[in-house]
Length: 197
Image (cartoon, rainbow, N blue to C red; front, side):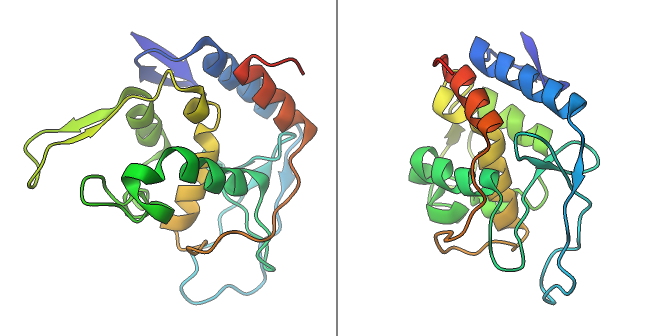
């Protein structure tokens, strides 16, 4: 079965709340007035090229093609999604993929994978899982997380954090400064988990 999340067709089952959350998010992205993020005036030599970003009412920054993206201020302040992604990654993903997306003996380094992996590919793998049988010295199996609300309700957050790591925009240290969580983000989070607002 194929499901549509943010306009992409994703096979497998999504929890109803995750699908609804994605629809609410898509509606919010469609109807909110974009705010253009400021880019730092001078970037370090190894920094990624500046990307045009828009910020929606949930506090999420997106690229021109609609993919979620991090926004890190020159003073090191992270947007809420990047900070939340750091927390969610370390709660749900680091056991296999290693601290800070650095990989392990049986799971790839996502900080490297997201250098070339697209957002739709990331979603497909997380939702439906992936198997690489006979690769290296052991089979690699990524379980499907499409039914796990602790992952699905924060899928964009996790992607954004890992993308910041892949682009070299965020180091391995624990983030110390962040934007505040918006009320709209909290309402969306509560809806995804089926909690009262």
